[in-house]
Length: 325
Ligand SMILES: Cc1cc2nc3c(=O)[nH]c(=O)nc-3n(C[C@H](O)[C@H](O)[C@H](O)COP(=O)(O)OP(=O)(O)OC[C@H]3O[C@@H](n4cnc5c(N)ncnc54)[C@H](O)[C@@H]3O)c2cc1C
Image (tube, rainbow, N blue to C red; front, side, top):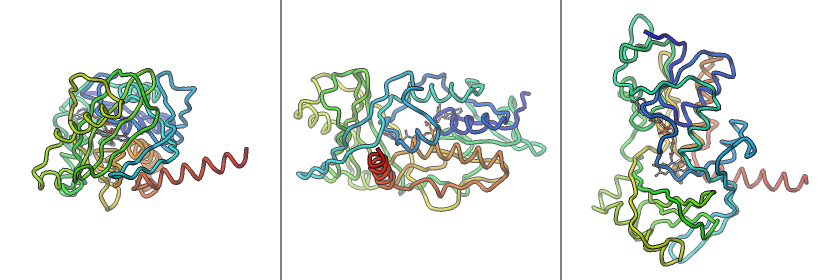
């Protein structure tokens, strides 16, 4: 059996940021992921500057497409609110593989099925053992499933269902567009340009109200496609979106017990307004590494609950930097 001090289940931004924080402090760790990287991850791929700063990540370090988004257009029926945008648009397949490689952690392709506590250690599938376990396996994380059933962070009322597709396409508009509450939809539609001739389009909504209305997320994806074609942003052709589900941030203390820490989507941390989870995954991964290394409490209260807070903070910061020249 292979033993490590810290075993991280999941190599997405939550797991790789935790590994980055641990390795920086010289702590022995290992990542298990059921996929081999680069892997597909359904996601709009908008990253806040705060998240990039937390990892000390600069555009010059990044070998793939990194697009500064100039502007967000938030559409509410006939009204449009344009906002200068401080976000970065990346492709998740590239970003996640890059973060994992940058953390210089060993990654073993392995789908975790069972975890048990044996003589004060955690044993995974009878093959790996560790003193500390980090659950970074996203919505279906086996660490969450095994040890946090009684205090699950995955509340039905906070469940998001999303459909999206990322594909090569002429980028006809470098702004991001978000359409809210279209035809009573309890969520929003998006159009997100990428670098190197790719775009990402999708729809995401709270699952419960959508089901209560007997509405279908597929219908809204079709409406989005029609809308983009009408605006000249999308060419004709069949679209094949994929679906995924995750959870908005719940109240309560940071999920940790007996040497186990949950980070990212496993902890249900996406922002409550726009459902952004990359930043919270990165920041919770770093926070878990800090708690493991120092023995201090695992805290998440510094991570904004709302994307609006991040947007406002970044805009104030940009103005301040511009004034200082
Ligand atoms: C359609 C859509 C659009 C989104 N758009 C945005 C956006 O624009 N901006 C934003 O900030 N957030 C967005 N999000 C949310 C964001 O994608 C997630 O919050 C983020 O990926 C969470 O990162 P994570 O590391 O916690 O989990 P993940 O990125 O899901 O990584 C979990 C990893 O665990 C592995 N794993 C799972 N189970 C096992 C197992 N049993 N054994 C081993 N490995 C396992 C998986 O293979 C995966 O690599 C979007 C989500 C969706 C669905």
